[in-house]
Image: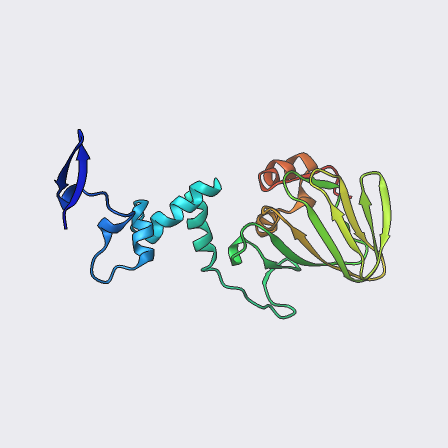
Length: 214
């Protein structure tokens, strides 16, 4: 139906085509819902464009949504004792190879009287948990006795060394928030045949620098 509009003091009929339409009404069609009208009013015609608008409003890159979508496709798993990637007495329980986003979990059974040597990590924080046995942990300039149930935190860049007691193995599980050390273990260079400098030339790219082997 035409409406009247006053122009120059004179009313004239206004065709329907010139009338102002309610927000979104031009989008209405058979089967169109109110939600469709709302989103189309902003030019949002797909789920992707809706996520894009939300990402912009929140200051989040659209790629973050896409990455989050990929994250949902990961699958968890359970490993029993002894299961995992076995490398020279160690067992890699979790790593990017098994589906993490960078964190690493490793079980290690150190022979009695053995040591990791003094070293530090360039990018990763490290956390040890003692499962069985006795030993000593060097953190910076301090030596601390450890036993089952103890937790050891080593921040990135701090010199540290873990040594087992002479009479029995020391069983630990350790976590790193960045990958690299597991790749060093996979490479498994023989430090018994190298100097510290030669060894570091090989393993530095994996994020660890050694100062001593003892």
